[in-house]
Image (tube, rainbow, N blue to C red; front, side, top):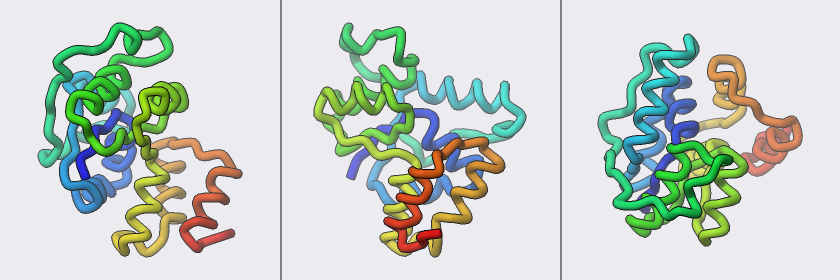
Amino acid sequence: MIVVADTSVILNLCRVAQQDLLPKLFHEVFIPPEVRYEFERAARTYPRFAGLTVPAWVHEQAALSIPENLRREDLDAGESAAIALVLQLRADALLIDETIGRHVAQLYGLTTIGLIGVLLRAKGQGLLRAIAPVLDELERNARFWVSRRVRQEALRLAGEAE
């Protein structure tokens, strides 16, 4: 399985030292240069991400072109470029958390997987014993917000209902 990642999924997994789940779950992980820039900017700007670097196993590739309808005010450059790269590579999925970006990708018929989806896949494949401690760490250390309803559903799907 080949995936393209937006910034949030990789950045937050790096923050909680779970980034190596991605190459174990997916054959290849690509990012466009815009995502690398956003990642590096977050690492320079926000103390909680200080010192983080894009993992060496990530393949960086620019989208040859970004369709005009992806150049929208409600999408950031990383989201637009990541969607364009999924289309270009005919990748299997886009790793993305942002609601608007997910919606736009789905309008193109793309499969989207968010950070919680990654954790559920990792648990399902035996790469994590439990997702609750990772969710706790994401909320505490990365300030990754998860609504109570979404958390409860994720834990139910993981067989860890609270």
